[in-house]
Image (cartoon, rainbow, N blue to C red; front, side):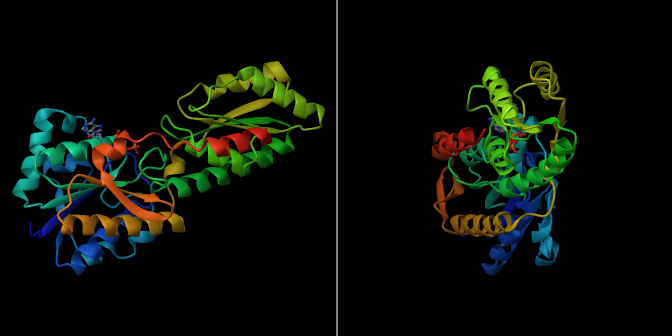
Amino acid sequence: MNIKRIGILTSGGDAPGMNAVIYSVVKNAFEHNLEVLGVYRGYNGLINGNLKPLNLDDVKDIIKRGGTILYSARCKEFQTGEGLQRAVKTCKDNKIDGLIVVGGDGSFKGANNLSKEGIPCIGIPGTIDNDIACTEYTLGFGTAVNTAIEMVDKLSDTMMSHDRCSVVEVMGRRSGYIALEVGVSVAASYIVLPEVEFDKKDLFLKMEKAMKNGKKHFIVVVAEGLMDVFELAKEIEKTTGVESRATVLGHVQRGGSPIAKDRIAGVQFGQRAVELLLAGKVKRVVGLKSEKIVDYDILEGLALDSKFPKDLYDVAKKMF
Ligand code: ATP
């Protein structure tokens, strides 16, 4: 099919690097004389017909900005048959020949549904959680990890001054990639993540052993959604006698100017997505494998096994 107009939306949690993709898609599309429609607030924009043409001027200088100029959202209605049909109708009414969806696993399932209804979709992994199996890297992960490290380093200064233990909850949405990289980078005394069963007694033993060797302040990094970190801090204090505080880093991890890797991957992913649509490929998801851009069928990509870096966890464990 000779394509003339493509759409792009950002969906799920926002991630630094999403703007780099939008810039790349518009620039590459224009090189091939394609028009681009920006769809606002994820799948909501398709359901409500909230679209606007994007020109080179709209994407000027956005590569350095966090967030997404198209805004993002979660949209329950899109998961209903009626919602899906409204989205399909918007695509048809606006003569969208192909749609690029930047988001996580959930967004890709939506893109798969749209493709089945005849709207060719390409998925681009954009989530700070890095929890998409078919790519070694998802947009926003590196920036989020660096932001969290900066925050934990600040906490660590004050914990050291008061001989305290800091229990820090980082993001990850049911995955431990952020917790693991942050934990190793801040020399955490312990890392708690969903991929490895948490042995509380082991944490207390490790802390007590370190205390015997003269250690007085501790950082425990916990992936979100596993436990109440305020309760864990209380238990640590009661069991070890070390005054403990809990901090939930929260959404600060999502913001900020993207690091180089998120900008570069954004440009690469965006270019590949446009090329795939031009080549008539549908229902694909792009990713990074051994520093190369790859693409898979969306369902095949979603079915791949988790890539959790057990080797890195084993390294981390020896450092506790
Ligand atoms: P993140 O990892 O940042 O949370 P995500 O894309 O996985 O990103 P979700 O909230 O799971 O985030 O999904 C985003 C949107 O994709 C949902 O609001 C919904 O509109 C659509 N979606 C999610 N799951 C499905 C599904 N199984 N079928 C169809 N659409 C879905």
